[in-house]
Length: 156
Image 1: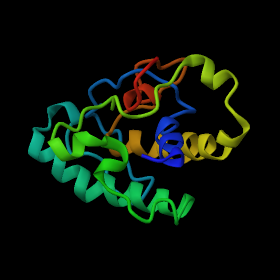
Image 2: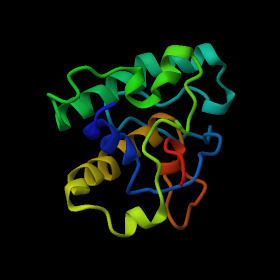
Image 3: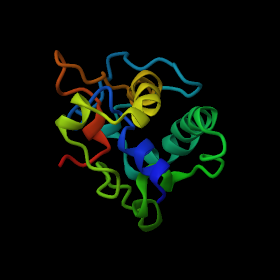
Image 4: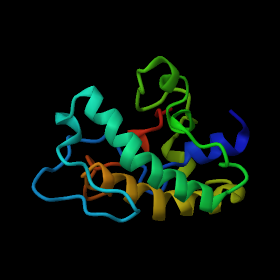
């Protein structure tokens, strides 16, 4: 994985810098903010096949379009492995993905200047769209169980 991919993946949900996600709210959360549709049931309630189908039909097209708009040349080849790494090939799809850039709370306090654009993209576009697609609330200081950075990235 090259440096831009690592940076992008590392900051996939950087502005949120949240914890692992909870089961999705099935009481009506999750409209459409990015071209896909919200999960028809709680993510936690879906079986493996349903999750794969949902990722292929809703998450992948939405995220691919967003990433390719953000960095068209870099993300010309966008697939399951962009976020899931080797887990896409072995079928585990483990998240948080141990191959993604590990995040620390200190990183968010003073991120490198060259990460600012991707941090903004991840925080303002990717994180809320992904949370919405999964029917989950976003991480915030007031909602520490919401979908955030550490839903995908390992903590260091």
